[in-house]
Amino acid sequence: MVKLNPQDIERPFAKDPMRRMGTMVGRSLLLRCPQCGSRGLLANWFKMNDRCPSCGLRVEREGHDYMAGSVMFNLVLAELIFAFVLVAYLLIVWPNVNWDMLEVAAPLGMALAPFVLFPFSKLVWLAADLALRPAHASELGDGNSEAKGST
View 1 (cartoon, rainbow, N blue to C red):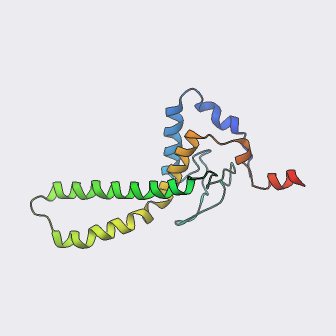
View 2: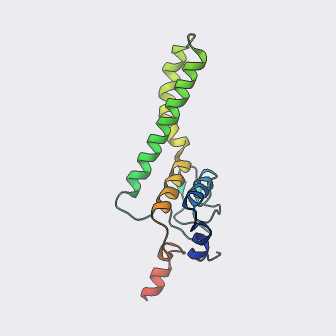
View 3: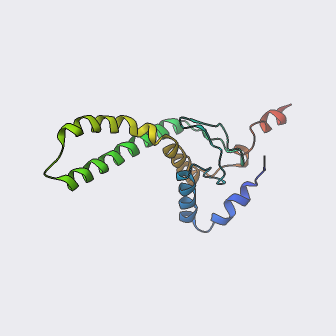
């Protein structure tokens, strides 16, 4: 595992926080670590690894409402995308709307969207959280540094 110095990751973005946020969100949308850009955060589509294999960033950051915010962001994002697709469909085919098809497609779309968007929304939420609360050196690593320091 390559050890990255957190200052080396943060330094290029110090003068332009919008560029940093854009870079982190872009990395997240490519299913890469928002902190360092490496792959390997997904164990499978519905499960994330605990840490980034390159920089060691914890995917589940500590904080009293981090998990609730992540779930809320996933649901809001999924339903907003679904609403935009629905309105676009109605505008395109109006007045010949296939209401029978919508009776089936709408509930299926609303139910499946959070699952399809899970890894993307999880990593975008992590990027937003990192933009507001940058990672400290103690959050980066293999997770064993605390245990080694205490013995």
